[in-house]
Length: 223
Image 1 (cartoon, rainbow, N blue to C red):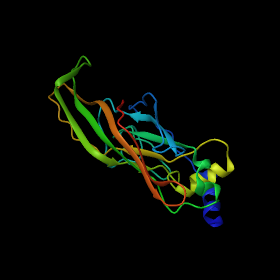
Image 2: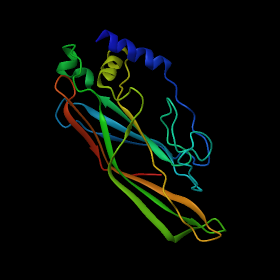
Image 3: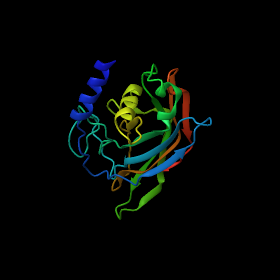
Image 4: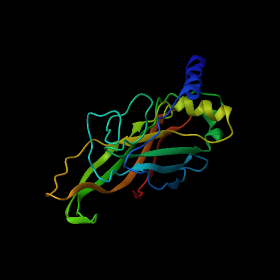
């Protein structure tokens, strides 16, 4: 176990995140609290942020760089400016008061997992820049798996953090969407009109500290 924590500590110090750029601008941050399912249990705060809604929408599914990029590079845990997406951070509260934590146990739960329903609205902009609702369509995905943001979803990293720092910590996730084909009439420009994220679920199955627990919020989160 010390070797694992040592690697986590080293990764925490050495990790880097690339800066997001391009025509898809980041949107507002929204936070929601989720109470513990039992008295004295672990509650959570979910933060939705870093959403990218590409406008205009002109993705390059093969690009790792540039304003149309849709592929992430090493240590890049952001939505891309070409395909768009969002970030989701989870802060877990009251972990330090759990019996397993007080007993000094390690987690046997491995990693946290997160899922959410997503709905992306696409369509076409008229030459004057207004959205033509007659061209709109929605791409929906139910309980889409959210991607791991580096080592943060590792349950033993969270325990290591809580034992070394006073602030609460939790798993972090992100979504970088696949490209969508948007066909517009001549003179109109493809765009993503909006993003809606609902029914967020974060779960773990750990007998020692975190329990078999799911934190859920219906949202919705908009961008």
